[in-house]
Image 1 (cartoon, one colour):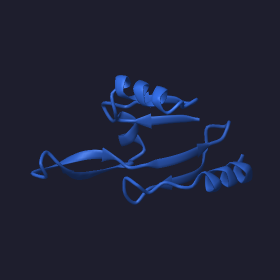
Image 2: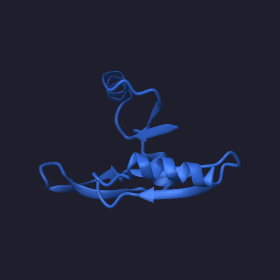
Image 3: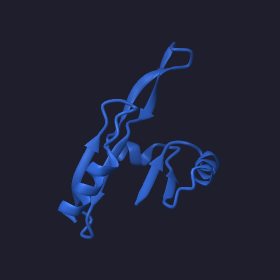
Image 4: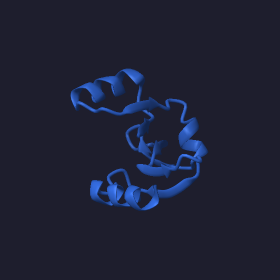
Length: 94
């Protein structure tokens, strides 16, 4: 399992340590991966006077043949699938 975020490597390292995460977190500061998978939107930013690109919470299940076998794209920054759903999908598709 890998997590990808557009935050800085320093911030992600702190977040991983503070939350005792046992997975790798990749920093995508230049949003290359986010753009490649088309999982971003423009949201209010800069005191709401401009739109800034933000990553959409997304989940991809990729099998050992490097095929995407399941995708979950959030509707907003809080929309994430439950652990139960993710576990069920892994059991069914891998």
